[in-house]
Image (cartoon, rainbow, N blue to C red; front, side, top):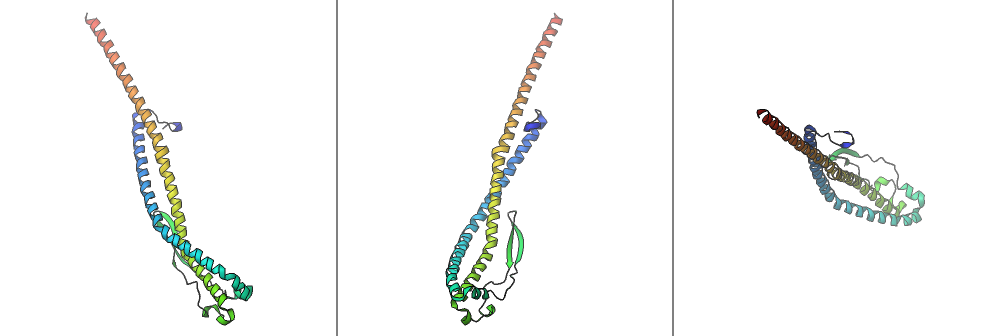
Length: 217
């Protein structure tokens, strides 16, 4: 192929270009199938994701609605005491692929919500409002950890779907038409060249026949 993406006008280049066009359409079909698979995967995840977000919103609303009363009852020091003893939350994460998209999943994790005994304070000292507030926020953290892998998977599948759609569009709307146009140009040029060669050959034969006829006379 010459500079500027134009094909050299010869039969070999035309054959290679036709093979490239076939590969372009084959790649486009494969990308279309991948796009359909990604779309089906996203549709399957959409409803659970919507439900999880609704649960997060509701739990956040409930937890935050109790926070002013908890502050008024026990103050900042009393609320901080509900976080004791400090603990590490260790998560076991595995990495896998969904339709070629790398994602992480949580395979093992501890329960976030603690019992009254695990808080290190008696319910009477903390008060029911503070205890309930702490429990609701711990439940919110539980839901957030559960939702995180799903949200990441949705985001990455969405990115992969958008990228695949752009690739399909580029192949079908830009690469394939441009290559097909060049193939037509080269084919038409070769056909025109063959017609010219055919006319020259006929003219040469007529001239030779004329000279031979003159010699015989």
